[in-house]
Length: 154
Image 1 (cartoon, rainbow, N blue to C red):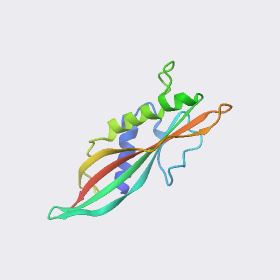
Image 2: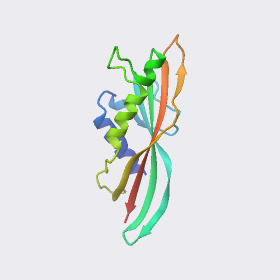
Image 3: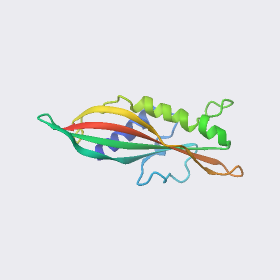
């Protein structure tokens, strides 16, 4: 799990260039975000799993879920969801979610100690988005997506 969390974080940092590298963190709770993030923050969290889904001569499969929690801070409530067409730099949670899925779907992490062979790397959907804040300050929109990895441990 440790290696997988680190690899997912590194992959997202490398591929989603419009979010500052310091605004990607492995978090202990999905409702925790970094104080002072500017526009976007991505929290990566363990989402649970199952060991021994299938055992064979080739090893034991670990079925692991990773939650990717997207936070967007914008001044228009609608823009936090769908982005702002008048300013393409203002991306909404669903635009970022699409980029997360594009980045992680079918990305079979490089073989390293602790992650021998990834058989499955796929998105599992998302939870309803939630909003925090008000029109007097700024809106922070949260959207949690889940990725599923099946890893064969030999």
